[in-house]
Image (cartoon, rainbow, N blue to C red):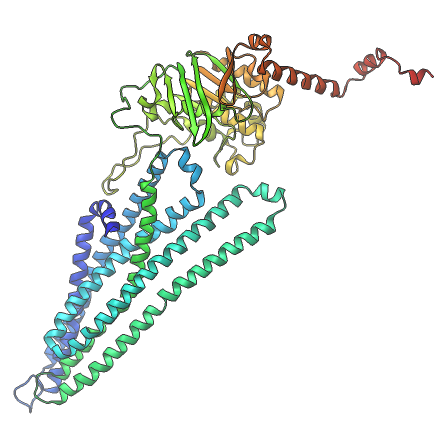
Length: 640
């Protein structure tokens, strides 16, 4: 009942369709019993059991024609109402499926990084497909058949009681057995279906991970191991499905056995009633009773199937409810977020910020002011908390203590959509979509003018979704690609900016993916630009071109560049060094080198490595090589 209560908001949106459809089912079931009434009248008339004069037949040819036309009319009427039912209930179930999928996807967009760190992609996909399909089947075919069964039982038993209470009691005697059996089977079906869906989720997650990591699997030559793991998971799914079938399969056979027993007893008792010869129970009445029971046989057989469909649907709905019940740890808090804040300049401040994961301290008492328009560099050893600073600024997480401010506002008072609309982040591992390069770069364009998609509303009569421009502003896309040092590469592609990338951008090199992500961040014209070690996969020449572009981009905006290369950081207005979650150094490149601390040591080691690389570089010009050899000291061994 709790499942139905949580489903009610969606059913309420289509209550008119469901009411009309369910009334149509009841009418169709009632009209469907009329043909047996006309058959009864015909049989009793032919046998003379309804005529006072035994010497004459109790029916005329005209009456037979009228009864035949009545049967045709009843069948046509029942068919018409069943058509109305299908157009109402089945369509309503499809619309409800759309609304649930829309709302779940919209809700998933509100969840934060910690949730997706725990969730498995394959499991989410299985819930949005397999589980949602089971719910739709329950709301469509299941709802129709439940009412069909209930109304069929009521109308059929009413007719049967009017014909013979003795025979009806025989049928009723079997109902407790049926109800008890179905109650037990329903619980088993529910439990075993849940096990099947859980295994389906594991298989979907395994397949998704293998498809995404296909290059790693092949690189380590572990295809056989992955195939064996996948085979083992499939065998477990087979075992669970067989376990489900063992409960679901025999149900129909048992129902057939019970119906056979009922027909046998009815024939025995009904035959005796007819042979009594008192005229209270005629051959026509017996025929109508058997025909009505036969009409009831299909709903009785369907009870088991509908029980399974309903239990699978309810089980799947509980799995979908888990998605709805998930809540982001970071969200706009009622009464705290200020909707009046709509624009940001890019003034950033970390005020005594501390962040802990359980017992582990990631940042400790970090205080830092970054005026709007500042080019800030952040460096430090791996695990020192550099990336976390950017995540705190975008509110991917909130600090354990202390305050992060933008333009003097605590970021927790800035609406998340406004905050993230003014910040662009280039992560360490950029994600690209299986789309054209132009659409990947322009991915963040055109969002500010789009209205929010309403949730919890019916799709019936809803306005059409807003038009999303099929192509981004190409002038802005090209300019962003130029600033990111990507334009030259794109021009060499056969289809230029219309080149479609493979999944996750696998058709590009690591450096090209990073530059595409940088262009995507730049094109939005953000107030704050965060580059999280996003130049690690490019060569020094490309790095120089990107930095030249960034200096152009940095005018009038705050740029936070996280990295390890001194060549990347040296032109920043300010550089901070983190170590073990603490801010240990701060200043310009020259000041930090002169200070002789951690930064100066990194600079010395990288300069030494660069000199060694330069010494090892082969000399390709013959004249330059000859000049070098001329000034080289002659080894003593050669003189001897």
